[in-house]
Image (cartoon, rainbow, N blue to C red; front, side, top):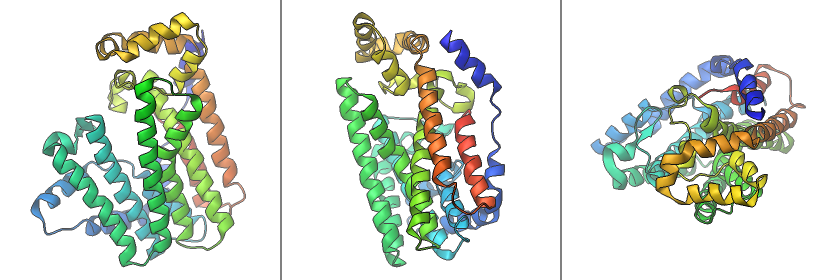
Length: 339
């Protein structure tokens, strides 16, 4: 019954067009893409080849979008704003490359990952290269505040990844652990991006902190929604096989809730599946059905909605302009996205 309610809800939601979110900064994002491409130019032929491949993989560029909207809601986009956006995207790209190596992922956004094409050694070095480009970019332009903000995000993302690996091995991850992991791994850079956007055009700490909180809550809602898609998404839209998180032994909020609200014998059975790579591969569907039956999907959706509401509340006192309306719409986009 619980699963039927959640499925009916998913059928009724109408996805938000990302172009409606982008509209107030569409011209600025065009300029950003050119500046970003220029920032990645190199005389090394192999690096240039890999970088051009990376540029073909660019997704929705949510982080640069957050930088631009964060700046525009506080007054406008300046040259410093573009530098903040370049730093955010360089860091994001570097972490994705490293994540694919750690996870052994062979696909990224529907095409072969960097490590699948050039193997792990080149992938790690390219990730390091992009990270160093971002840090040097901030130093060359004396953007010391951005350097501090980005370095803090790098630390948090690393800590989140390590905590996830640690807890996955022992299968004792709690909801508190999970929220800390996704806060550090995902929300930290979204928070940093929106805060850097504001800081690029104003010294007003109230506005900067409002956008920092907005990005943090948006990131939490984004990741929980992403984790829900592992149970409910269309693999043709999401680009990943249904239940792949389970096969990769990633314990997310729907499963955490289901385990917490089940009998000891059921917990033992599910954990037995999770501990064995062979069982995870053959019986992932059983885990998916268990989560659905225990209300894990409804609970995770409710938690995500709570963070979405907090994101909206964080910026409700900022000036009501096109940029703020897009920030509100971005929350809607995150909560209704199907891929």
